[in-house]
Image (cartoon, rainbow, N blue to C red; front, top):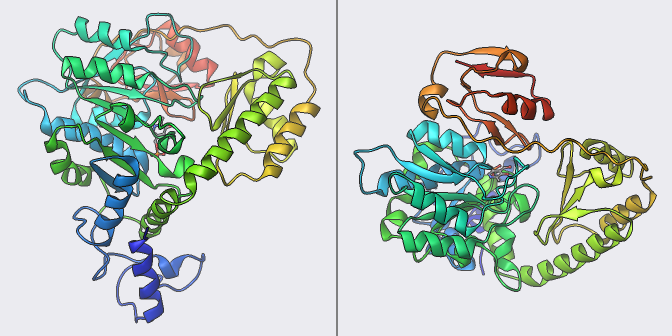
Length: 447
Ligand SMILES: Cc1ncc(COP(=O)(O)O)c(C=O)c1O
């Protein structure tokens, strides 16, 4: 295996050139990483016209993920999500009508932003069973099948988020079978699941039949924050791969971080090496940790092998309170809200980390009185205006208490703050207000 971007930068540092190019730090250490922070000098390739070292590294990563093509992003999955939807916008057949995308409600904010930029209409998919979680979709292949059959016209794509923040995973194989039968491309926000490819049995969306997916390498792999992939499946239409770079560049900076590119490059070298074995050990250790937490009376949920999601309420805490208790033991979780805390593991966690968590679980007192916040069903959207039109309308900020019946201008989000409670163009109902307050959102922009 190789790391061509790193090799190039190391060689450049060794040559000790007089740097008459950007960035302005000229490789002189202030923060510590300046030496390796270069720009598109001769031989460094171009991210959006990658025919040299970047292209080579991307090809190696594509092979590791079983993708037809993998594009690097130094601006996270947020950029890849816009690019995936942009590719559909470019490649769809009937451009005389607005692009239509079917998606469950637990989309990341980047999806809403793409809808604003590309003027996409969304057909929201709700699970058959009533859902009380904003962050999880709870949708099944039959929910997708039903929605597609009820749509007045065929959507240009189906878009799902799996895994979600609390670690629930959709039946991607079943959903992709439905999408293929209906002739609708399946896009998956796999920001939390890059590692799923390297489990003993791959659970990665590309393996399971998605046409495109994004992975935030930085969330689960050893990569600097911002490093992400857009993968295109070998079974996706050829034209997706052909226009992908061009479309991604529409939304991206022309100055990609070479530090992040080097990190993606080294990460590629790492996943092609001993990573699957290290990951298998991590999955085992995480499962043992989950078992030990349950033996202490903690209730866990979610399906992800490298995520520990604790239902804090069942041991008498709000998620935020339990997170504070953990901090007192020197443990920092990924996320907490009124209900859950989420902890993420990787091969880079030390045995000591697990032991600390297990010791905290044994020692944190469990109040007898259980905290049971009222379950609030996810309200169905009352769409009063297109997302783009509302997002670009004149608006004012009002207290949530005074927002009843108004039209939302700027999408209000929760869940780290990324999942929409109410989307631009939707009516703010009493049920929406209850949820906004539950997530301590006090003000909202309305038309
Ligand atoms: C489900 C989901 N999708 C997309 C994103 C955006 O990813 P990134 O931070 O890599 O841009 C996030 C970020 O938290 C996320 O949780």
